[in-house]
Length: 74
Image (tube, helix red, strand yellow):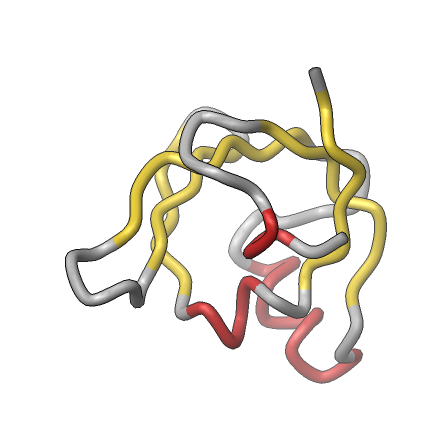
């Protein structure tokens, strides 16, 4: 399951990344394996999306979010 599979308000735990090159950029922004992310919002046209991670909000394009593999959290 990837981050784009979540619905607004759902949470997930980052497990891994599908793209090594993009994973470096994402990790520099705080998307580290083991972190809990919360899916907060979607722009009116569907892209980008806003997530909460490590106490701050981060906006990602859907193509970037699709690289983040997660485990859904209750």
